[in-house]
Length: 401
Image (cartoon, rainbow, N blue to C red):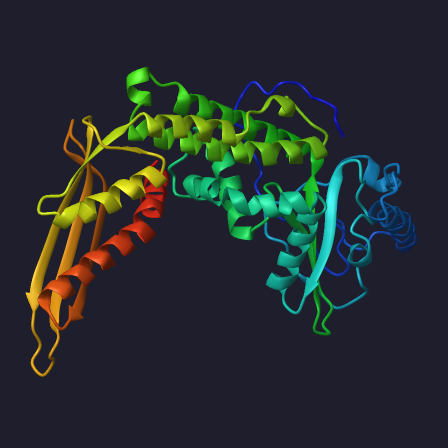
C-alpha cells in the first residue's frame, strides 16, 4: 500500500478518539444488531478464507462486503461499547472481517477470561498485524509518549492529537486502534473486536508526523550560541526521540495506504543524536573539588563526564562544584574506626548560577584505623560515581526537556 494522498495543510485535526460502537446480542462492528443470518454467514466464510490466505502469505483481493454494508462505512460511536452476553456467537469472533472490508479496515479479535483481558488481547493482535518489528519499536517511544502525556511536548493547540497519544499509551497499543464490539459468552470467555479504520489512520498519522516535524524544527533551529549549551544538547536528544517516533508512524501510515507524507525522506533519530554528541564534546566543564585527597574524587567525576560524552576540564560556562566531607565516627563496643562521607556535586551554569544537575552520595566505611576507613570511604565514593553519575546525568538532561 504505497499510494500517496494529498499533503495535509493543517497539523491540528479534530479526531474522534478511540470511541467505541455499542453492540448487543450478536453485535457486528457496523452498529446493527443481528444482521440477516445468511448474509452474515456468507460474509464470515468469505472473509475467513481471505484471512487464512493472508496469514499464509498469499496476496489476495479485498474481501467482499455485504450489499447492506457497502452504502456507508460504519460510524464510530462516541459511547463506550456495551458488552453483549450470551446468545449466538457473533460472526466476528471467528472472523474479524465478517462485516468489514479489508480495503478499509484492519481488524483482529481477541479473548480472555474477563473483558479487560479480552480487549488487551484484541488490541495486541491488531498491533501484530503491522509486524513484530513495529510491536517491539512501540516500546522504544516511551520517552516520547511520556513527554506528550506529561505536557512537556505540545503537538498542537488542539488537544486531539495529544489525547490520541495518551490513550494509546494507556492501552499499550497503536494510535487509532479502538474496540468495536465485546461479547461475553457466559461460559467463562469474553471476546473483543479491535479495529483501525484505514482512512482515519491515514489522516491521524499524517497529522501526527507533520506535528512532530514542526516540533523538531522548533527544537533544532538554534543560534550557534544557544546550540552549544546543555539546553541545546537536550533539545537535540529530544529531537532524536521524536524522529524515532516518526519512523514508526511512517511505517504504519504506509501500511494504511500512505497519505500526505514522504516517509522515505523522514530523518532518523540517530542523525540528531550524533549532533547532540557533537554539542556535548564542544562544552567544557570545569571540575572543582576542594580538599580532594589525591585528586581521586575529581578524577572520578572527570571520567564519568567523559564517558557521558562531555569535555571535562578547561574554563567555560559550566562548572561541576563538588563539596566533599569526611568525618570520623566511633561506636561503643566496636573496635573499628568509622568514616562518614558526604558528597554534594552540583553542575552549575555560571551565567545564572542555575543548578543543571544535582548529585549526592552518602555512606559510612569502617576499619581498624581511621586512615584506612577514610581510604575505604574514598574508594566507595569512586565506585558510586563510576556506577551512577554518567547514567544519572544523561537521564536528567533528557527528562528536563
